[in-house]
Image (cartoon, rainbow, N blue to C red; front, side):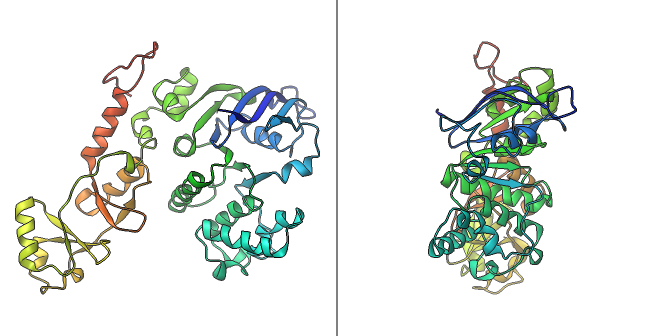
Length: 387
């Protein structure tokens, strides 16, 4: 695959420092992939990212973008070709959301109609209604909403390349997980080339097509796919950085859509008590899933709940159903099912329609398959080697 970005012997020595922050870094970043830079604090991750768009000028070495040496081109022009998202978001507080997102298109001389269209389509892409948010100010948004606007602003001029410096690091875990999932959905459609800095190996595994684990001075300890890094760490430094729970981390590599869902008895809201009772007896299950007219899961209904509801009113009985989409990771599914009713995760499609369920046995089977695929040093498969 062609390298969208190539760093060649890139070095940065800050004034007054004896040792380089980045020392002779060479790496290729493939087009259309998310490449994660991860490593201990102070190892040079953010400095490396800022060198790419020359927010920090390199001491030596070269930077290639689409085969062009951009080390000596106008830095402002270069940065307008590259979207940039930081943890602190950096929205202009005195400007509306519309004006924040429109900043770079205006600098590029876009006409007003094109800017309006672009801002609205980006707000929709990050799950925010243009009518509701276009005229608001950053202070009127939650942290998660401001982060979404930051991502939209970085994409405003439709750049081929995006740099993201711990973009989801300053928000709560639930919002962070949702934003990660939303961004991965966008990336599956847009196929941007993204360099993404994080200190969190779990986020790196979830988000990255490739991961560069860095030692001090941005020295590459291992640069590979998440799968290879988890099953075949290059050395003790990488293995220690990953941690001992590699099996659980591998659950971030597979998604619900990759496993076979289990069938589970379901009924429509208009079903009668006798139909539900018979289905429970035949299936041997403790509960059925009640679906609405669009086959969207609404509630769990147990045998004991049947006596509390009249025929045709099953939607009013039982326990509400919590659902997950087919694109979430198995790790996300496991987390959901641990606290869920019936210890199951109910899976829906993009329209919210019921698809099936996933349980702990499915997760266990996926982990065993991942272990069974682990290669030895020669590249041959080794079955059952513990992770």
